[in-house]
Image 1: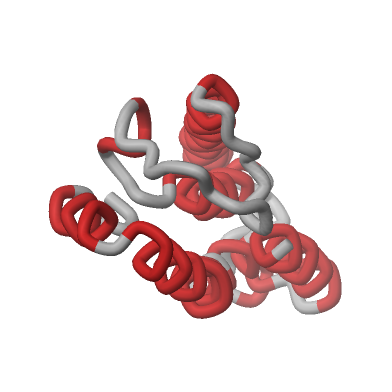
Image 2: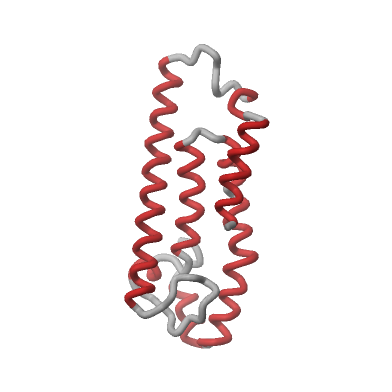
Length: 154
């Protein structure tokens, strides 16, 4: 829900307090160079959204193949160390952050981009740290070894 809140709040703030206009990023008579820049940002954002979707799909498939439920509130029967989990301990949360950035760029919504840094902070505080405590208590040394080998985000 945290990334969704950031996207919705950023979209609403952009509607009520459009930063782009205040910063002169959306001139009335947009020059051709500005239109090209918007197209580039849109394409970069699209790429990030597609990357985020692929990363989530890859992680969910790996979880399901291992017999695990991808929902974070369900018990974890074993530590998964293959696929995207060998690159990040939290590939789904990472994908959520990448999605927020990509969507903000794609839709040219400055507020979403400004709120996006709060997403990993909130995810870490309210989701990741409790999950890590649960995993350490449940798995002990094997989880600590995994944590030493694989970074939390990237």
